[in-house]
Amino acid sequence: MIIGVDVGGSTTKAVAITDKAEAYLTVATVDPLASAIGALGALLTKMSKEMVDIEAIALTGGRSRILPERILGIEAFKVGELEAVGIGGLYMTGFSEALVVSMGTGVAIVEVRKHGRKIKHVGGTGVGGGTIIGLAKKLLGTTDINRIVKLAREGDVKKVNLTVGDIVGRPIGILDLEDTASNFGKMSDEAGEEDIAAGILCMVGEVIGMLVAMAAGATGLTDRVVLVGKLSQTRLVSEKVKKICEKCGVKAIVPEKGEYCTAIGAAVKVKRLRETF
Image 1 (cartoon, rainbow, N blue to C red):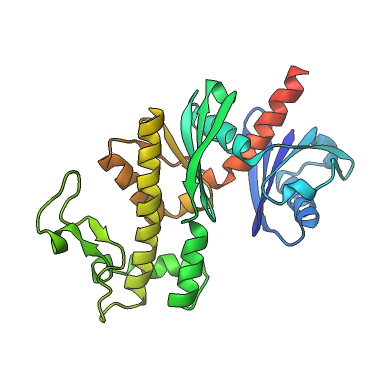
Image 2 (image 1 turned 90 degrees about the horizontal axis):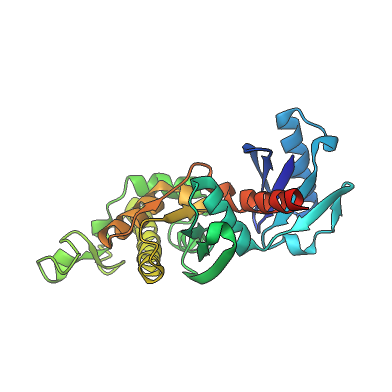
């Protein structure tokens, strides 16, 4: 059994890989080493397994670089985050090549070819989950993503966004009357917390969606876009990304458990290396 551990800034995700991904777990990141050990212990308890069942640990994520080469006596291998994202995206979809979009605090877009043997970072944006939390803190007085999403579901973006219909009164190119012409360009005095929350999620989804659609067109991977990462599991955002992509002739999918993509990719990479040698 290989354990993949993605040590992020706020959460640490762990996944067990044998012939398939078998168990998933998330804990808060406090200290990187303590969080990694805590995730390992909790995952083993969840699976009714013991330390001797672990063949190796695959570490990835921004805070994994400071971790030692052995954890609790088990060999630990470090896998680059972009490589882990790319391999994980292919593993979760069965694709041999894809454009994998890691949607977290920020967004990274990764072109993956030749069954993961060729991986290239093609771009991204700083507009992501961190943007949602930062704007919501100032505008809504909360950093609770569940509350932000709940508010957004009840909101009306027409009270904060200018639409194509508002400005020109007719469709333009691929844009319909109801499509956004300017995020927060209207901002009615009647806009409540719900409308502002809806506007924030809409803006983030539209920015990501347009960048992804352009990257897919540039790489020719218009039928193989994979949305992963914690933010991909926020449907109000991922559905907006998918809608923008669809308008541009791009097909995007969100695999189940996509927030564990990086941990899975790291584990798969290490598993393949050990099988080779």
